[in-house]
Length: 559
Image 1 (cartoon, rainbow, N blue to C red):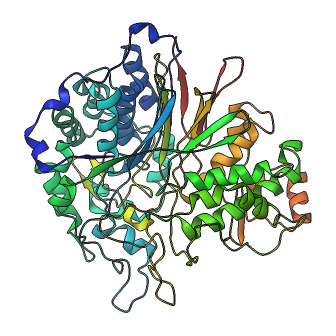
Image 2 (cartoon, rainbow, N blue to C red):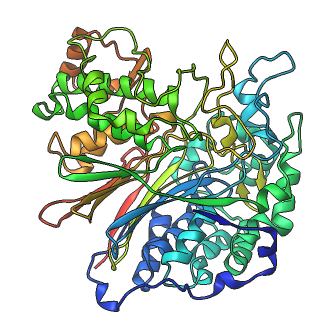
Image 3 (cartoon, rainbow, N blue to C red):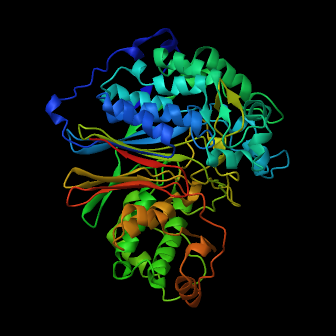
């Protein structure tokens, strides 16, 4: 099912009307609401909406509007998102795919130079051709139309006030501003940030003005009119101009998708389907279930070894088969016989990186040339009516392209496509660029159900390391018996291909030595970019939630 926002929406102001969704009686208000987000101001904006009787869909809009202002390095209204909604009335979940889209003028060779060689990542990420049609606002608007309780025009007040009065630059944002990211050399970023750093007040009057129009016009404020014209003009600047048009912006569609679900422990774990990597993550859970990891602990090198080997198998299949194509072999990847066979490849000691398997329904695997950097933000909301949202949202790499329009950064999401679109024999990778296509994503906003009831949610930032970050956390919070906060604080370990990286200094010495004895030589300096936010409703009803200690997130729980 798709939602289309044509250019005619620029003439409509219906977005400010009270939502028409059937919401049920007030006596549904029996759940403790909560918000988990990467910045306190964003979490507070969401909780303010919940305390005023708003729904999870209402609060998610407020959280994203604030994140775009105070955490611009990670997500924003100029980016995309996968929004996973749990409906307490039906005990089911639904995915609103707000992933960015390649414009009609995109081509397979757009990230190759005149000689057919890959562009450097720096050149590509700063270019106008890196910008995809943004979808985060469209996805939030669609979810709000279906499940909102407050009018759309009531959801932006805190973000508008904060933009106009200014906010104090947090240590995390300040640290990014002090680093040598190429996006910060862009003229727009230089003008906006100047020499400001941690502790300084930063105002964004242009963004406040845009939000005032967004609250009245809905997505039309972004995809039509003066903002849309400025977006198109901005992508045409520089030596590598893009092909984005007003028609591309106006034609954006939110796709409503059924999640992919699998039974694991006491849960039904549900994830977005392709172009998300959610089904690959479910494969990881299936592989782990076939090992002895439940008999290990966080201090046991065998547990970390099993996690690493299962991760390598999952990534080998994910990299070969996933993209915005209709033939991703999901059923084959999750088939018990296939999982059994792949799990048997986990030997007592590590060998060479595994190749992709051949599940039923799979095409011949093609080498992947995707370069997916860290970035992104994840947040979770539950309202007092029992509805919940798990959403991962992004402008791709740090500060997107570094190009700004009306106070927000434009994404560089099209660099999530494979730069080399064809194999040596001319076969296209599933993640090759094509007009109207959505780039493969590692974003996997999960929802956990227990007999149809909401039992948890989790997701992360971190580019192609996201499945590893989320996997480590769920292993810790389930198999290893840790609280969510303890599981989030566990060291990160990412095993993909020949490289196995970890936060080596955080691992117990015995684990490092034990992994080395099993043939795993850890590469230091990996994994610091995680931003996992998670919650599990324990069997006694306790809300066990946490925010990744590597960022500035908070957990707010209402009454």
